[in-house]
Image 1 (cartoon, one colour):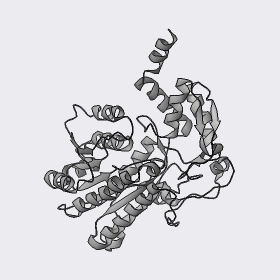
Image 2 (spheres, helix red, strand yellow):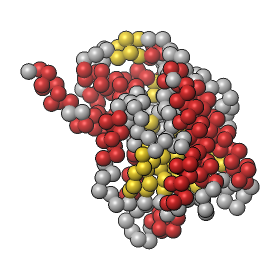
Image 3 (cartoon, one colour):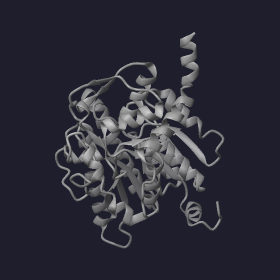
Image 4 (cartoon, helix red, strand yellow):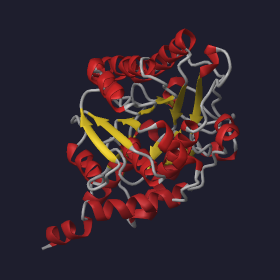
Length: 362
């Protein structure tokens, strides 16, 4: 990296970046990008078993031997431990991605969301507000806060031509259809209060269906891949009449770092120290179209079982990213077909699909 690069200069001046949820999908990718540009990174994660911990440990293994990275295994809801870590390491910037994810799981295990999402977010807020010279907290929100917002076209295909328009940050977010969504909206309101009270600079990012290599096994494209390779049928909820704004992980990381580097409310009123921004691809794709693209990437056809909508799901998501674009020039580049091919290639290698299938055939 060029020693005159402003990002490297900032890293030297402002100290390390704390990334919570660093063993997770997005946290792992964000931490690597920060390291690539010359930053010091402190990673925090409890490494729970919501999905296979082996994948989380494999992500963490990719940091081994990197001198500018250190890892702390702790619960983000442990307010005293988080505050001590921030204070002892002189942290002035935080990317807070640790959370209990999953819309459907929130129906089965609601109290996990109370601790990880609500108590965890409050612990981070308190640590940041007491940190000397604190600069910026970027935290994960979710497109699920918008609730049910059907778009034009019964199968979601019309969304690709514009549909009814993208979800805007100025739209109401008052009718969540899952506890997960309610906790994420609550975090936004907590952050707004801390901005109003203390002028704490914060950016909340409403993520729209992130996918790609090293992804989460509970996401549809990942689960479909496992079942297709195993020769098992896939369950298609909403009878395929759903659409998602699938956003490739590299594009997401571009937006996260762009937001981190552009601090809100500089020199302005306290309340303007907090902003909420959409971060998505802004090109929604129907679920059946996604499955078709995945079949192409895998070179196999899926056996499909059509199911009705599940509680907590929404029909469609569609990000208006004009605000993030104006702030940092955010512009997603990876189309779904290319992104799924990259994921399929990673999946084959990581899970050694060909070797396993050869053994089964013997």
